Amino acid sequence: RQIDSLSNKYVSFSGKIRYGFSSKDLYGNISGNIPAGKSNLGFMIGSDVLDLNNQGSITPLGNSINSLFYERNYLKLYEKKFVNLSVSRRLSGGLVGTLSGEWANRKALQNTTDYTFIDDKTRQFTSNNPFDPLSDADLFPENQSFKMGIRATYEFSKEYATYPNGKVYLPSKYPRLGLSYTHSFKNVLGSDTQFDLLSFDIQKSDISVGLYGKTSFWLGGGKFLNNEHMY
Image (cartoon, one colour):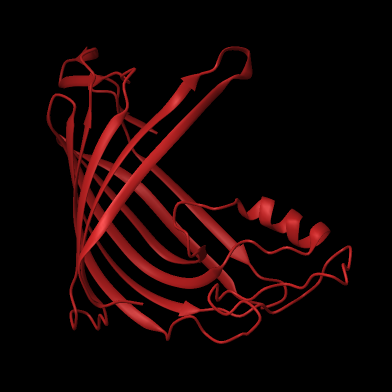
């Protein structure tokens, strides 16, 4: 919803509900973004079932189709209950800074059904433990994590729209650069983890490929400066 037409500011809220018919578990979360002066406040609170690959190896719909018709379950899932808060602000030109914090409880999950439309005798579902796919052994014990992160992104954009309360920069034809640092605090709010992660990424969306439509790309990498306690 637009709350200030003079400055082109919007407030947004969204929610998600997920129910497992086999496990009989209900998950739900709500997220939002609220303008506050020259900053944006964001939050996400609730629970969900997530893939170990947080970049998204395959969509849930794609995984369901592969599971039901080809007896292949590509997603490796775990349960997460979480509270995530963030604040972001444009610091100068195309430079945007973000400070975030998250508390989470993570729990390994086991498959609760092997139902499929077509039973292929040469295949079987694999567990959510990629290191031991034929066993239901937990990948990690249930644990809590409290972490904070700082992130800077830079977009090579010189074009902008002017409003009475400021500028809104338009998308650049060049990729956006991102640099992130995350620290996990052991024994804070029951946190079991302690690590330092530095990462870098480059991304671009809405790249025109003519009659084929549009595409996008994301490339990234990082290094753990400290991995004393991880799950």
